[in-house]
Image 1: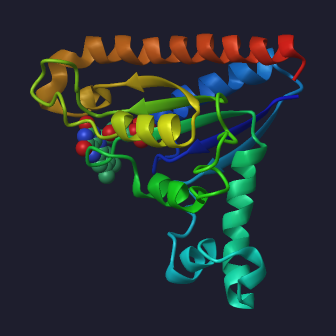
Image 2 (image 1 turned 180 degrees about the vertical axis):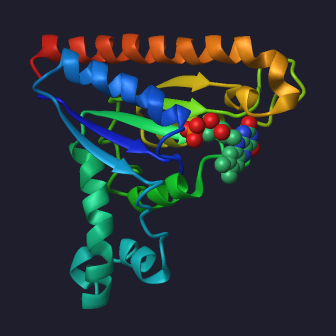
Amino acid sequence: MARLLHIDSSLFSQTSVSKDVARTFRETWAAEHPGGTVTYRDLGARPIPPLDELTAGAGYTPAERRTPEQQAAFAQREQLVNEVLEADAYLFGVPMYNWAVPGTFKDWLDQILVNGKVFGLEPLPLAGRPATVVASYGGGYFPGTPRDGWDHVQPYLETVLGKALGLDVRFITVQLTGAERVPAMADLVPQAKELRAKGHADAAAHAKALATRFETAGV
Ligand SMILES: Cc1cc2nc3c(=O)[nH]c(=O)nc-3n(C[C@H](O)[C@H](O)[C@H](O)COP(=O)(O)O)c2cc1C
């Protein structure tokens, strides 16, 4: 039975668009693949600590040469890495904060990106596994618009998840989420509603396709 690792990173528990759309993915996944399991982390509610010198140093030290302090510091990192290695599929809820990923998501990436464990190996241990990124942006970054090129969420995650880890990454991005809050965006509300509805529809369709693929393969 396939194991889904679901990581959310919005600060907001009730109003988050990325959590809402990721929930649609997850509920469809659960309905279509009832035997599958889900490991969930909400980095907004429970951030994991950023890397510190002791933990990072442990990562550069062969296991048998780590000090007891390094071993203790590395234990949580190993748990996070094992969650990644043991999953068959990934779901990431990632809001845009200051044109990039939230610091909590970057902290999680810094913890799990252990060279020789999840990347830097041939073949890559996660190669080809499906990852779905549900991204939510307050503004619009469409081609030809004033902030075209300011999006450092998708290009960054394409590099890290797609190239460094070798995951098969699909982005479901909902833009203009600020339209209903920001008076200057009022005329964009109809488009924003359409984009959000499309996000839910795409999330459900993609979750169904992936779940069916795992069901058919007997995973
Ligand atoms: C700290 C912070 C920084 C933000 N920075 C940006 C930004 O740079 N560009 C943007 O378009 N929206 C920005 N927003 C708006 C969020 O991208 C938008 O509210 C999005 O829906 C957040 O995802 P969520 O709904 O899942 O929480 C920011 C919001 C917060 C809280």
